[in-house]
Image (tube, rainbow, N blue to C red; front, top):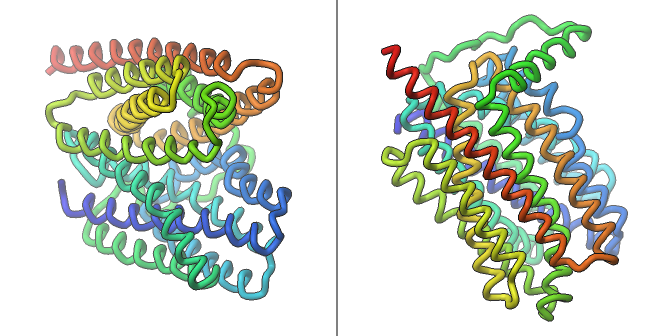
Length: 406
């Protein structure tokens, strides 16, 4: 791939390691300072999720209006400064100030993530989009696998202050690499458009909804993703009960599932990165959808931890291509002027669906067999596959029409 894309992916991977490192450090710090307060832990989780519910759609609209390059660089600077604020909060033992700073970090992360999605089509050619998204997925999963362990080691040996300082440093390094990636690179909308009037915000967000609703290929991909998230919400809540009640294993064995999930997604992302030129987008999406469904069937029917792990591996091997394919689909076919809003609306809807299915599953776990709810999750995977296949048919039709016209 081109040098700008390689540098950009490097910067984003470093930033992702910082995010993973910080999240686990904050949880350890809050637990230690508050003597295991459940309220404080819940506040941390809320600080990392609630801003996505309220700001993703608006963030997508603003990214569509502003220079994505400037948004990305300003967010790196801001997150580095806020990260230094966390150092001070840890030094003075101010947990609630630290949690408030997490909210601010999350807000800047929303804008940074959306700007990054918009930049992909401008940093690499169309034929390398699958590879770029696959490499980003690998970097993200590597950070999720390695970040918590490094954070625990750093926190135990040196305390929260140094750990937060390293997180702030990661944003500074990412900023410098991103500047190098964008040097002498002309991008659309490099100047920020005039500020949007408050009364126009709803109109511009509505444009994104209208495009999403009236474009079958993007709409079906969006629906497939929501079904996938719905199943994940059930599984994330029920799995610990399934392991203990149905399989008779200690709840600590859930750690195995987390590890194999991350490693499997890294493997799948690597395979797509290597085989991107030989794997058309519709193949990547189809393989992802089928593997997710097969994995869900294994999980719901598991009678031992080994079968459960196989199911989790298959699901993870499907998640990577499904997510990579969805990102590539949007970057390839959604007009650049609407790409931020399209992804922003997805980022708003996904947490709502996840929280809803997770809370429903949690409320029913005392009265229903966990296996029954995992079977219900399988139906969500089946619905997701059907939506993916509808998307695949539309992709093939679009490609055919392009060839005929050319």
